[in-house]
Length: 325
Image 1 (cartoon, rainbow, N blue to C red):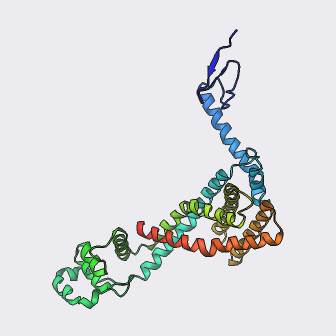
Image 2 (spheres, rainbow, N blue to C red):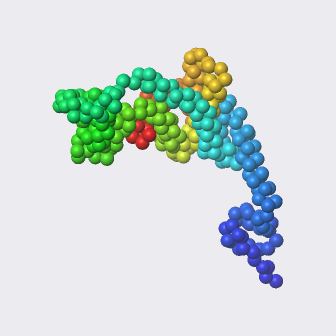
Image 3 (tube, one colour):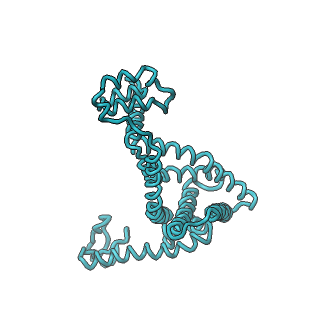
């Protein structure tokens, strides 16, 4: 007698009745969505990830290279996925860091306001528009370089509510300026009027999580260039994800210490040294080369990333933050 077939609601493959779970995708065959099922699935999924995180946390912090080795060996369900680990810990770090960055933003704004150059009195200028403009000679608004302009001329035009285009011209912008140059002058004027440097700093900080999605593969690429014969790029990416998860976790503890007790500068230096030692041991355990080779390649990797990649990335991030804050 031919057995009747059942269709899986998830993958839509057919299988014989009698199976409690689909043999193709693993979904429960009789999986009617009720409040009870929804609650059980939510709790189950939450605690499975939670349990794997705590099972992965100790090896991540105290056994450099261990999780990356286990993952590339195929033991991928026992511990938290490297991308999940990185994302979860980075969210924790940036949440904690927001408390420090908020104070830094306020400090920058206060410093700029204290150093603000007195502006020309607006009311007196409005009653003497012609005289104020006559006093601004051609030499007053010639730009000395790309980042300086005559502040007295700009103050005069701002005070009489002159059109933005006229102010940009005095600042040195060409009439045929492209999008980025025009945007640049727009932001310079905005900064000059508001003295709100904290917003630029905040925009810079906000761009760090996005930048890390580009910096992480670059870090993995540096490792790939140093170990080009040994492992595929995906292995280096796994190693990088776990390493930066450790870095962000370490920085999270450092931020907590800073919020509770203002540490001395030696603590930052100590943490920097410990992070490098961790990285060296992780490289030694994961790539399994000699101690001398591992030390040399660790130094090359860190030097290349910190001295070449990070400054270039920071410059780009600052420009983007300034243009779009």
